[in-house]
Length: 70
Image (cartoon, rainbow, N blue to C red; front, top):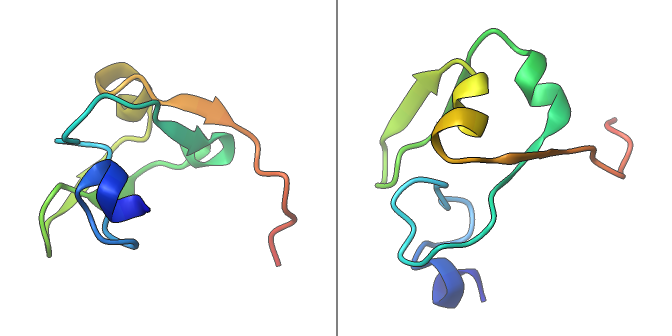
């Protein structure tokens, strides 16, 4: 399903360069971190950035994870 919807394999889905517009969500606690690394849209490409750029550049919507982290 992920491949059909995004064009990417599961585990490598980037919020950048999606083939069609779709909502992007980010776990809210990630936005408290100093720096994150995220898939840049092709295999092996990681982008280091300030997490706030996710909400500014790709309009990611913060959400709270319902599952407890172990």
